[in-house]
Structure formats: C-alpha cells, structure tokens
Amino acid sequence: MSQPSRVLDATDSASGGAVRLNRTLRLWNLIIIGMVVIQPTAPMGIYGVISNKAHGHVVTTILIAMIAMLFTAISYGRMARVYPSAGSAYTYVGQEIHSSLGYVVGWGMVMDYLLNPLICTAFCAKAAMNILPSISYYVWILIFAGFFTWVNLRGIKTSAKLNEALCGGMVIVVLIFIGSVVRTVWGVQHNPGYFTHPFYDPATFHAASLFAGTSVAVLTYIGFDAVSTLSEEVENPRRNILLATVLVCLIAGLLSGLEVYAAQLMWGSKPFPNDQVESAFALLSRQAGGAVLFQLINFTLLVANMGSGMGSQLAAGRLLYGMGRGNALPKSFFGAVDARNRVPRNNILAVGAFAFFVAGILEFFAGRLGGGAYEIGAEALNFGAFIAFIGVNAAALVHHLRQEKKTLGGMVVPVLGCTICGFIWIHLSHPALWLGTIWMVAGITFGAFRTRGFKAELVSFDIPPDEA
Image 1 (tube, rainbow, N blue to C red):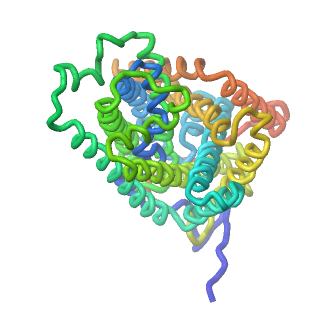
Image 2 (spheres, rainbow, N blue to C red):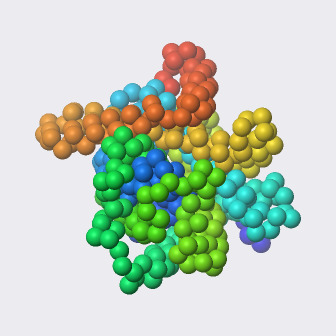
C-alpha cells in the first residue's frame, strides 16, 4: 500500500535536511519549457492584427520586437546568476532595490501568472467545443484545468517530458505549413520585390504603422520569463538560466519570423477584413494547403494553448512558492513543498482552481462584461508581465552600478530594456490598465494589512544553494 504524500514547508526536514524543489532540469529542458509557454505558434493568433496595423510588415515587427525583448531576457539571465531563486523578478527587485518594491513586482507577476492558465483553459474549452459542441463549455474548462493540474502535480520531470512532445508536434506543423507555402509559390513568376516585400514594401511602409505593429508583436514573446521561475529546479542555474532565457527569445523570434514570412508570401500587404482578423492565419493555411491544413492548424492552436496552460501553471506555482517562502504570502500554505514529488502542491492546486472558477464566472457574465474569459484575461495579461520586465531591468542596472568594474554594455542593456518595456506598458489598452490598477491596489492594501501600515518588514528572501 503506497504511503500518502506529505506537504512540508521550506524549513521542514525530511531525512535530516530541508525539503527543496527537485534540481533535475537541464538547459535543453528549460528551452523546451520556455518555448511551450511562449508557443512555437505564437504569431498565428495575432498575425491578422499585426498585418493590418503594420500594413503587411509583420516579419519586420516580429524581428524588431525580438531585439527589444532580448534586452530584457539578458537582464533576467544576469539577475538569475546572482539570485538563482524561484521568486524570479520578485527576488531580484526585492534584493537589489527594496523589499517592498520586490513585493509590488511579485504581486504584479501573480496577476500575469494566474491569468495565463486561465485564458489558456478558456481558449482550449472554446476550441474543443468546435470539435465536440455537445459538451458544455463548463465541462470543458473542468477537464482542461484538471488535466493541467494533474500533469504538474506529478513532478517537474513529467512536465518537462510532456512539454518536449508538445513542442516537437507544434514545430512539425509549422514546418508543414512552410512546406505548403513553398510548394504553392515554387515555379510561379513573381516581380523582383516579391521575396523582399515582407521585410520592406515602399508602397505601404510607414514608420508609425510599423511601431504600432511592433507593440502588438511583442505579445509573441510574453512568457519567456517563466524560465527564471525554475531556477531552483535546474542544474547549474547561474549559467543555464541566462542561456535558456536568451535562447528562448532568439529561437522564438526566428521561428516566428519564418512563419509570418511564409504567410506574407501568400497574402502580401493587403488588409484583412475586420471579421477575419482573428482567423487570418487559418485562412492562409486553407489557401496554402486546403481544408486538411486548415483543420490541422486549428487543432495545433488547441494543443499550443494546452502546452502554454500547463507551462504557465508550472511557473505560477514556483512564483507563489518563492513569495510564500519569503512571507509575502502566507508561508504555511504557499511555502509548502510536497515531500514525494518535491513540487509546491498547494500552489498548483490553487492555480488550477482559480483557472476553473474564474473562467466559468467570466463566461457566465460575458454579456455584461463585454467579452468572454479569453478576451478579458488577454486584455489584462500584459499589465503584470511588463511590471516584472521593468522591475528586472531596473534591478539589473542597480546591481551593475554597485559593481567596482562597470561596462557600457552592463548599463545600456537594462536602460534600453526598461525604456522599451515602460513605453509599451503605458500604452496598454484602457481595460488592461484599469484591471491592473485594481489588482495592484488590492495587493498593496493586503501588504499594508500584513505589516500594520508597512511598519514591519514586509518580506524576507531565502536564496537556495546552487546544488541540492
């Protein structure tokens, strides 16, 4: 008869030692998890929006956004070398600038990391209803939220192996799409600028439109920072987190650029009708490969969101663990580790429950709120993400300025990262800014209550050893 698993807090002991997360991931595992959270198919869902805003220059916006996000990725990697902690940006800002600011950044990240599993659960439910419409939306969200939770409770290695399979499948579909485009355009006579217009078309190029498209294209990379929350479960974190974070951004950018380049060869720079913007990539797939490719792309987007939902729930559990261990959240619940699988079980269950109940509530009130769970969640997702990005760049700059040996690159990278992310953040949609502000006010109020008006120390930080 198997023994029931025990849940221990970070200071409890099993076999005489503190119970920590299981340090088994390698560089390759990190890259795969990061790619699945971002999704190798990330630009497909927003392709039509970017194309209309940038007048067809989707490839250029994707590549510009990649360069912009690489600055922040480098800052994440540098800070992970100093603080290899599951708390990620929460720890970096709290240690380098101020513990209260670390708490504020962590609270913003919680919003981002809770909403990602929620919108993935909602999207998967809607997509599954297209296949089996007889099953209710509410049954589907229970199925997907339960499946994501079950996978992540089985341990980090199980999650990593499933992510590898999902990532491989998505890449194969992307290659099939690209192959279909090559077959379609092969041997057809084209004007001299046909193969360069996806990068620059003088007839439709406008700098303002290019920037508007780039502000949307940045969404392609949201989620790369999830890699840093796994710092306590990776071998040699001071090296591998930096490499994985930068490589995830780079690989995602190049793969996304190749996807949208192939798409633009099929469509050009003409605008999509308003009622076809969200399904633009699927329509292109039908043009390139017929009904079979159309259905394959639709199914792949479902699988992609399943992978992203599992990966973001995985990261959310680690962030909440880092904050719980530091007393930013109730330690007895959020700072606990399951002794058998060495995962933050309470946090994974809480994130799964949140995704299920809130996805159901938002859908129930969709008419009054002006959109379903997916639309509303997607609006607010970037608010918390960019608070974390700004905070990490600021922490990297402060850390570098404290060093005896200073370099121009050490200052320029975080300054550019902070400036770009700050500009994007203040230009988020009004619903996102309102929802984000309400969330932050609630978090600051909670922090004030826990510290009696910030008179007591808000949080503490526990940086684990590199090997465990």
